[in-house]
Amino acid sequence: MIEGEAGVGYVLRPGFLLPPLMFTQEEIEALVLGSRWVIESADNHLSDAARSALSRIATVLPTDLRNDLEKSTLLIGPGTNLPADIVDLKYLRKAIRNEHKLILDYSDKNDAASTRTIWPFALTFFDSARILLGWCELRQSFRHFRTDRIISAHMTGERYPERRQTLFKKWREAEGIKRNFD
Image 1 (tube, one colour):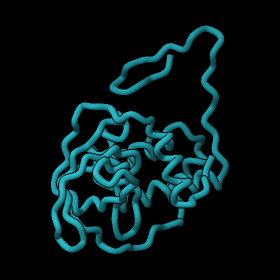
Image 2 (image 1 turned 180 degrees about the vertical axis):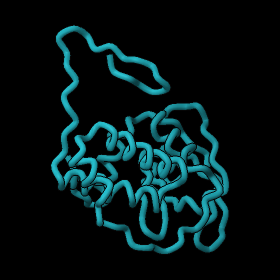
Image 3 (image 1 turned 30 degrees about the vertical axis):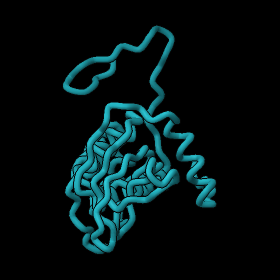
């Protein structure tokens, strides 16, 4: 039996074993560095999740690797202060996960307000801004929306007609972005 969240146990089917969680030193450094960036640069929900993930990883590592994790000297330098978001990014991530259309009230860089129905498929985190990527029904093309300029967002409850990964792939192709992970 494996201990799960809130003490709930999970039973593996007979014949299935959970492999040991082993990382190389470089993998631990990458996890720590990435988590530290999320803690410093993402919204509160993702920041808390990164802290929790590091804590869970630390509890299952052998002592010597746990010490490497705790003693990591790879740091994230101070970045620019991100503008405050009005809409909780957790809500935007939920719309992305559920592939639901969003109606955004948005203010552009010139403070011109507009209302858009979009198909959100990704959220991008930069040092100076967060960007929601979506297919805009009004413009019939991909658009980028700074999250600090989103005045309000409402899920319609309606799924958009294409899969999130399909939109993401089409956006990468339109932007000339090659996949840099696998």
